[in-house]
Length: 395
Image (tube, rainbow, N blue to C red; front, side, top):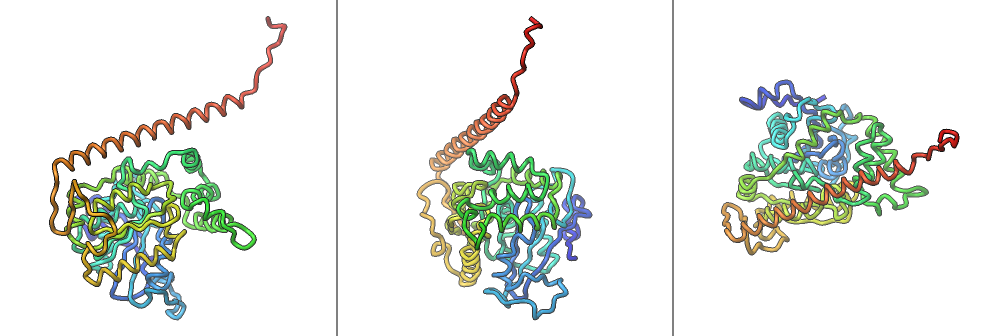
């Protein structure tokens, strides 16, 4: 099976810290166009199958013994080679035991090591959720090696990782933490990944929820439940992630085109955070809103694939970012343009104040949600306690 020993492609502290760390990857299809897919929290390379099929024309990996004739042709078949991999802490990749060994910067360096291992100089980089955070870091580190950037269901990390706070989301969070078997994990993953409307659709004589449940149980059983070290580490990577002004400067000055793709019904990564990031990446970014949940790449496969293929096609046409973006021009604050950027002190101060107020609101909502959750558990606990009858003789 193909592995990349990341330490071999790094120097100094990075090489020492990653000594022995292996990342499992697979490539699909053949062609001059290279696409790197970076999956999110608790996901594996196979989570990209609907996109791999559209881009590479096959989901049969290049290291498979299946004959070439078994590989069907999709929209991108014959012109693209795609690589998808398991992030550290998940699937067949190494699972470091220390939280400090999981940051989006470290994981971006894992992805760069894979590029070096494959001999890929320039690539289209597509990331989902945590994978989109990693993709941002990669693009900031080596912007000269990025042809285009697609960020699916992304947030800016940190407090923006806090999901939408309501009864449904709090229930999902509790069920997720309590899930110990593939069956329990599959049930909660469905509510996390898809919109309620999508799951309730009829598929023959059953529902889409029932069909997907069986697929999820089979998939989780095959790949195994994520280890505690891997889960805690990847959570740490999301929570400590931050896109700095220097990162934005590096990405925007490179001038490559960006698609920010998001499901409107995402309860995990709120769309408002994706829109905020897209505005910071103006004029290079285009915002693509679709009906669907956190795994919009599965729920709205055709629309997502069309958006990705369009991004690849347009990126070769040397179109101006101003002709690509669908976001309004910023009238104040950081005016990000390729190669140049100007800032307004008044706009910067107002932007900072708005950010502080937004963070305060999120933290208040978060702690209020925790309080309500604890109160609900206490109420249910008390209601289950049976009254004790006191013997009259003991007065």
